[in-house]
Image 1 (cartoon, rainbow, N blue to C red):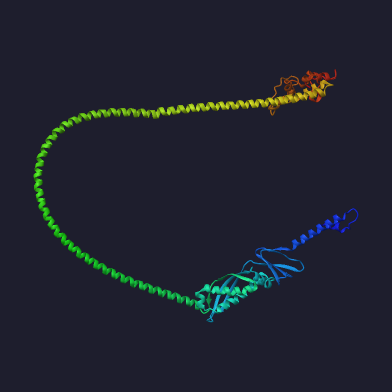
Image 2 (image 1 turned 135 degrees about the horizontal axis):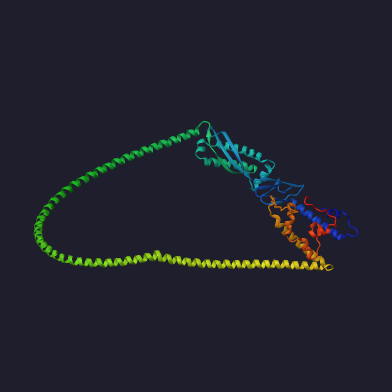
Length: 498
C-alpha cells in the first residue's frame, strides 16, 4: 500500500496506460473497503454482551450475545458487559419481623448480568458505564431492602421453622428488583438466623425440652409395658411349672407301679433262666472237658506240623531275603558306582568334544586372523613397494642428465638409518661412571674412547666412497684423509710428554 499510494498520486501521462491506472485504483479501493469492514466487524464472546449504542434504529442500544455485528464509526460505538457471576455478601442485622422483633440474617447472594433479551437492555441502560464494584454495591442495597421487606411480612417462628419457604420468598423478591437493572439471581444462601431478644433460642430450648419430655414419657411407657409383660410372663411360667410338676408326679407314680410289676415278672423269669442256665452250664462243662482233651491232642500234632512248616518257611524267607539283599546291593552299586561312572564318562566325552570343537573354532579363527593379517601386511608392503617404485621411477626421470645424483640421494636416504643404528648402539651405555684401563700408550684415556667405540662400526665415509659419493666435512673424515690433508712437513712432532 505504501508503495502504491505515491504511484497513484502521479497523474497518468505518456508511457503509463489509463486502464492500468484504473485497475490499480479499483484494487486499492477494494482493499481499503475490506480493511474498513474488518475493523467495523465486532465479535462477541460467549461470556460477554456486546452493547452497540448511538444510531442503532432499535432504541437506546443494541445488545448482541454470542454473535457478531457491524459497528459503524462516527454514528455508533460499542462496549462489553461481563456475564461472569459475582457474590454479594449481605450482613443483614436488626431487621424487624412481623412481631417487631429484630432479626439478624447473614446471607450470600450470587448474581450476574442476565443474558435474556429484555434484561440485557436493562443492563445496557443502567450498568454499562459502571464498574464491577459499583454494580455489586448497587445490588447489595437492593438485596438488603428486599430482605428487610420479606422479613417484615413473616413471623420469627415461621422463618425459623420453614427456611426453604423463607429463601423462596427472598429469591422472588430480590429477583424481581434486580431484573429491573438487568441482573439475575443465581443462588441465595442463608447462613444463620438470630434475634436480639433470644426468641429463636428460646424456641429451640422449648423444642428441645418438649423432645426431652416426650422421650421421658416414651421411656416410662415402655418401662411400664416391660414390667407388665414380665409379670405376665412370670405368671404363665409358674402355671406351666405347676402343671408340669403334677404331670411329673403322676408319671412318676405310674412309672413306679409299672416298674414294680415288671421287676416281679423279670425276677421270676430270671430264676427260671438261672435254673436252665445252670443245667446248660453243667452240660457245657462236661462237653468242654471232652473238647479240651481232643483239642489238646489235635493241638500237639498241629504244633509239630506247624513247627516243621515254620522252619521250612523260615528257610524260604531267609533265601528270599538273601536274594533281595543281593539285588538291593547290586542296585546300590549300580546307582552309586556304575551310574556316576557312566555319567562322568559321558561328561568327559561331551567335554572332550566341546574342547575339540572349541580348539577347531579357535584354530580356524586364528588361521583366518593370521590370513587376514598377512593379506593386510602383504597389501601394505605391496603398496609401499609400488609407492617406492613409483618414487624411484620419478627420481630416475628427474636425474636423467646426471645418474650419479639419484645414487647419491638413495645413499643419503639410508645414511639416516645407519646413523640411527650407531646412536642406538651407544645410547644405553652407562656413562655416569667410566673406568678406563690405559696401557700407557699414545692416545690413551678418555680422549680416544669415542674414536674406539665408533671404530667398531662401519665408517660412513667408506660406505659413501663405495658408491662413489663424497660426504661433507661436518660429518667427519677418516684418518687417512686427515693425514693426507696435512701439509707435508708442516706437523710438529709429538713427544711422549705432549
